[in-house]
Amino acid sequence: MPATVGVLALQGAFAVHAAILENLGAATIEVRTAEQLASVDALVIPGGESTTISMLLERSAMLEPLRARLDEGLPVLGTCAGMILLASEISDGRDDQHALGAIDLAVTRNGYGRQIDSFEADIDVAGLDAPFHAVFIRAPVVERVGNAVEVLAEVDDQAVLCTSGSVTVAAFHPELSDDDRIHRQWLDRIGG
Amino acid sequence: MSSNEAPNSGRTTGTPLVKRGLAEMLKGGVIMDVVNPEQAKIAEDAGATAVMALERVPSDIRRDGGVSRMSDPEMIQGIQAVCSIPVMAKARIGHFAEAQILQSLGVDYIDESEVLTPADEAHHIDKWAFTVPFVCGATNLGEALRRISEGACMIRSKGEAGTGNVVEAVRHLRSIMGDIRKIGQADNAELFDWAKQLQAPLPLIQEIAETGELPVPMFCAGGIATPADASLVMQLGAQAVFVGSGIFKSDEPAKMATAIVEAATHFQDPDILVKVSTGLGDAMKGLEIASLETKLAERGW
Image 1 (cartoon, helix red, strand yellow):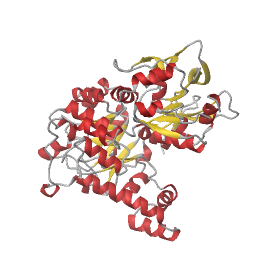
Image 2: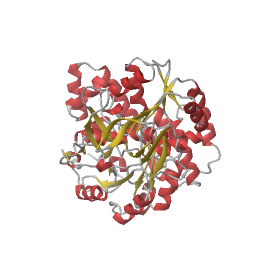
Image 3: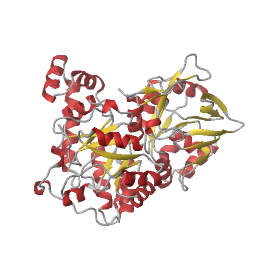
Image 4: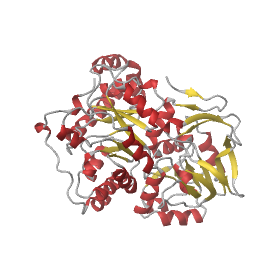
């Protein structure tokens, strides 16, 4: 298990990720500064408002340090807004929104619609014995999957959980389901 | 309950978890009142996590008087058209027809708000009957739990909207958070008395005793006018802030909006707060609570 797992805490559902990881035995810290980022061995980018998190990364002087860590292969889990930020292409984003390009995916923000279209569904996940009850909140839709990307789960033929190298991303919120299997699987994958 | 499963898709919408989920995503952020598309762009550019579309900010509602109602659908659609972040809108307390219209417009959250003139003097909206989630104001824990029992998925302190004076929001937050801490120390027999005193459902009191938390996210609204105000209420336990008149009644709205967004993230870091609080021009002028003719926070039952 990585010595210290950071949870990006600029905005969004960071606290519940940290609680799940602590429960699984990981030492976690909330990351709001470049100094804190430099001290972590793995990172979670949580759900939240992706445009807000993108701006706060820039204003907190963390954008370039984060790009550098990702280039070095920092293990990272991105959920919902985290998936959008880590993708290589974002449609329906803001012009000034940063795509970190850590995983070769094209995503559309709020691709399933507005909040009244947000939903729950049972999904089959590669490597898990029983379906995972997934919660999608104004979730991104994956429009294109790069060759090097492995798709671990789909909804209606669209990828919703993907991994490539040290990066894992989910369009849904594994932290909201009272089920730690996705987090456990991630910790195992990055060198349990 | 309004949650519904679409045929063959295996997707269920409008569940309590889906409704609360959006509130979870708004934590650590700033939701800004806007009255037109230009303000909505300024809010989004500053890093707002959501906007609240309304005809007049609370300080203007106070000044103008008269009956204050749900906004014109055209005005809300104009804001939806320019925003990629969630758009919220307000319905009057008890006015479920306004709420039905707002749901049909596709707003992302409805605020059943004391800032508008109440439509029902005894009943709030049955919020379980909707797919869209609701936020409601509260001045104390009993009020918060009554709103949750009616289906609210997010609670905000009421504060005293349109005053630029944070004192009432602090009173409400301290009351709510203080009672949560006391319930955490209570024994089983005392929980029955807490339910009676607060006029709140016993199962919700028991849940608080077990978890030490409100069952839904707890945000702050009413009178926030500076980055320091945002830091104060978040240190007192609010998980995000609503800013109404405080931005667009300040000297430099774009700067103030950006500064409050950064303050909500770095609320525990005074060094960063020095930087973001510097050179913002004048905050909104504000009002003494004792000078008010109408206290909006007294609306709601």
